Image (cartoon, rainbow, N blue to C red; front, side):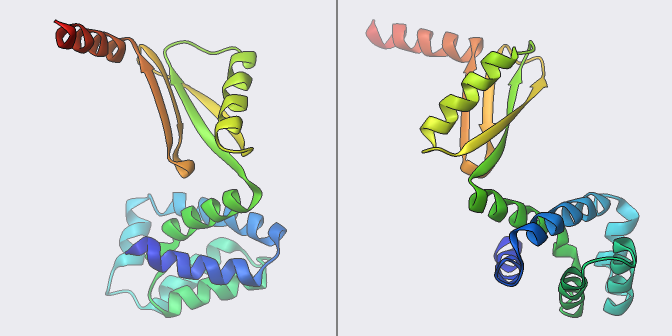
Length: 178
């Protein structure tokens, strides 16, 4: 439900701003979303005991005095409607809208060893072909996973090659053929 409401606000923001402003707003809102992970901030913004005006002024103070007037007005509208707790969701939906608009996405490669730049580039090119030309920037995360996992969440792509999975499939194939 939160995402549906956030999409309405993001659609209004997208319709009334330029590409550059949207990119700037996205960075700012993603930074604010990180602040919401703090328990005290989150509690204050979700508390029914704190008036919406006070919540809004707190968020606006975080923007600074030289903030874009459209972003200030956007946050005021969200605050007036008692929806400031949706700012992290709005930030996520806005980032997705920008990625869709620019056809540039971010993904994660998880493996036990560091991949070389050429291998990472090859994966990005393969994904670009698979997605019809989308530009995908992959970042690597080292973990204890025996194999490799590629995930581009905003496109719904997840590919996993692991030793354990291959073993399970091989055993399953052998048992079925007997």
